Image 1 (cartoon, rainbow, N blue to C red):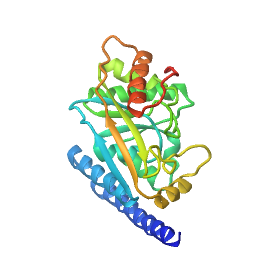
Image 2 (tube, one colour):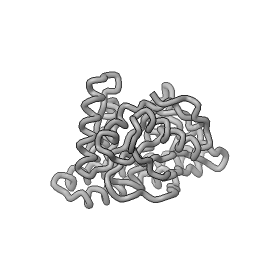
Image 3 (spheres, helix red, strand yellow):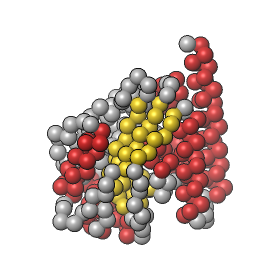
Image 4 (cartoon, rainbow, N blue to C red):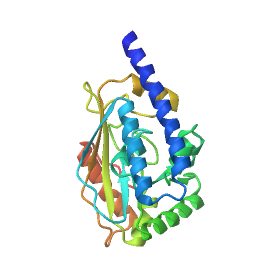
Length: 253
């Protein structure tokens, strides 16, 4: 037990240094940098953070070229980092609360994140327009249509509003299935960021865990032709549920 705690403290210290290094890199290099350079640094930083936390990344499948709306289930605050390790060009839509996270909130914003006040319908419309413009310009935008994290054992209903950006621009959806496992659990409880758990509590749980693996299944793209956002939400939710081996009884709304 003592050795495990010492290892966790060692991991935590290295993570803090890496986060501060990320701030320095973004501050020094991102202003005026090419998209390719930014993506390379984001991918490097994300992959190294997972490694420092003692996690192994296991992607399956390949991303297609061109603009796309990435749609993923949501388990942990680390989901963005995991996706950026394989798709660094993704611009995430994230709840505005994330901006208040110490240091990490600034870093997430520096990666091109679009922040949304989910309780504000007018703000959701603004982000849909902003996402559609990014897709028209050839960007990759990523969303978590559950709107919040689950325990990883099931999918919450999908809020399909943000999928309207893909409908409006004719951009395909790229579903991702995210799952965290450990040697004793196909779905690790250590990664779940739910209920009243704070970011600090979640971080400590993760650095104390052993053998965590983050699985990212890159599923076949979903064309938008002839489908509205609700139908699209149901289609990709069914795809993700099948990949995770969970029920998809609740429809998108």
